[in-house]
Amino acid sequence: MFRRKASSEPDEAVEVEGGVPDDVDGPWDSDETPDDGLERVDLGSLRVPPRDGTELRLQVDENTGEVQSAMLAAEEGALELRAFAAPRNGDLWTEVRPQIAADISRHGGTATERQGRWGTELVCQMQVVLPDGNQAMQPSRIIGVNGARWLLRATFLGQPATEPDGAQDWENALAAVVVHRGTHAMPVGDALPLTLPDDAQRLS
Image (tube, rainbow, N blue to C red; front, side, top):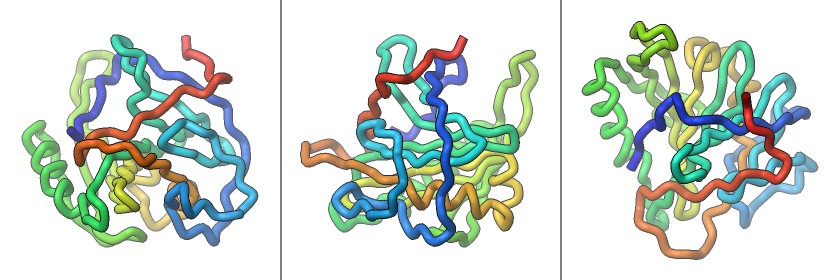
């Protein structure tokens, strides 16, 4: 249910500009979207705010054409976003966090817990294969936010992962995300569907 998609899958890119204020306190459910004046990119189950200096990239399954995740990316790092169906009034993050840590360990990485802005998060070193075929360890920081029948899983990469105390701007971008669960029934743990905006451009 909570697997990373292959890096060979194509991305779609949407140019975004804008800024997120410092006083945000989300992520939000779509039924409680704040009247903050922020323009958000509508991706179906996720509404993602612009962040200055970043590009919104959408990871697409080349076989099905389905969008798997959204990522705000910049030179210094990135924020990957995925949302999943969760039980009403449940704590899915506490349930899946040790599963994620165990999966990372099975693949040769490490995952330790720390307390952050949204409670317990995972600080990870994940084994990845570089474009030249060599293996390397990629640092990441995984945060889970329980919402109204949804779980938002956010993964910080690069500088926001290795320097969490200096990642306020990145965390503010996460705090301004809106999750749209919808009313349809879904098995717990299934990914909420993402859609490609009409103005998305395929990366060459």
